[in-house]
Image (cartoon, rainbow, N blue to C red):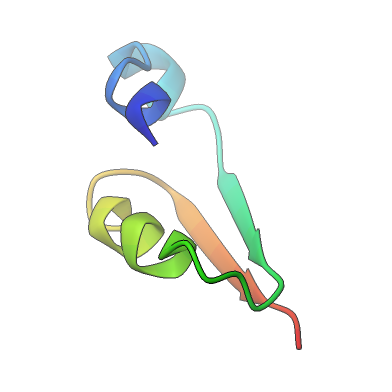
Length: 47
């Protein structure tokens, strides 16, 4: 999720990022949650 660090501040205020996790094993949810306080982020878990 390095690209999230590189978003321009103005763009961060205009977007909502949706992360869809379909039972991945690569810590997707944990990585996304680390950014949830900094960006407008919605995490969707699909079973």
